[in-house]
Image (cartoon, rainbow, N blue to C red; front, top):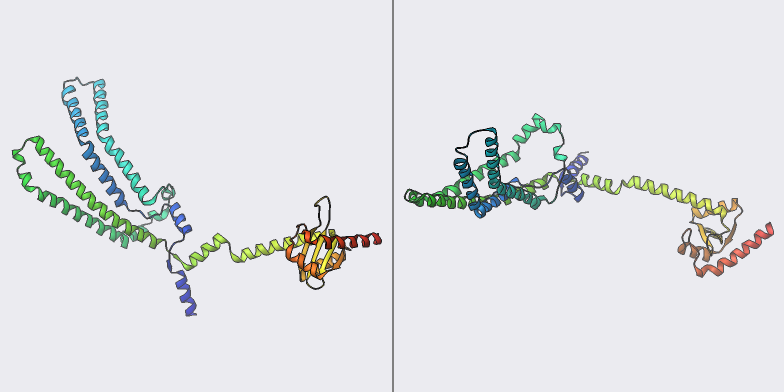
Length: 360
């Protein structure tokens, strides 16, 4: 009894890798190995690269906006029309400043998802689920190992980014002390350069952490979708069909085929037999085929059944051991007899027609 329980326990333990079918089902539910840190790092990297490339354009747009507001519109009488004009022009300038960043962020976000999970669209995670608002389940998630890992990961990111930015500021501390002796443009350019260096360094660190996080997420996902040996057996049954049901269907099909075959025996012209083993029912109908064809065949018990039906319906039975065995092996039901049997079958049919003529 204990051995049986132990076997059941091990059969239910999830130790096997998920099957392709299981993976596909999880994917349809939106359950995939994915790290949000990868998306964040890629978005930040592309955004800072864009700032470096089109920063001068954005600066010009901001200056034009300030000129428009504080020079062109500063003395305009406040009316509904002037306010609307100011709002429209301001939004237009603002859109030209922000649009490149927003566009790149969207493209980077899509690229990050495609890089991790490929093309995937599902509404399954949006469906209402009471388990999501279950306080007990919520508490379990908050105090789970996964939550602890996420907390440690966040703290580590804060420490790493803080260390990198502080190190860069410390590296340029002497230059910062000299900024009071430099023109405003030079000071702004210096801070811009330092900011870009800090940003790129931080993003590269985040990319490194994102790769590690993705590997962890993949490991965690693979662990979560593991299957037990029993799960794999059940899936195989669902895909291939229950062997018991399949055997029953096959048995029913065989019975139907046998019944159909036996119903053809009374219309046969002759049954060729090996007295104890084989029976082949032959029919010749010029409107169907140009040569005789097999309407039924059987071995052992089936052969006896064919002979019984033939006897009940006065179908002539001819004994020919070699011919019956050879035709059983080579000819299937509804097949025209091969040319090699033409002579033998022609003689048998001639004999049968003579018998039937005498009887009639």
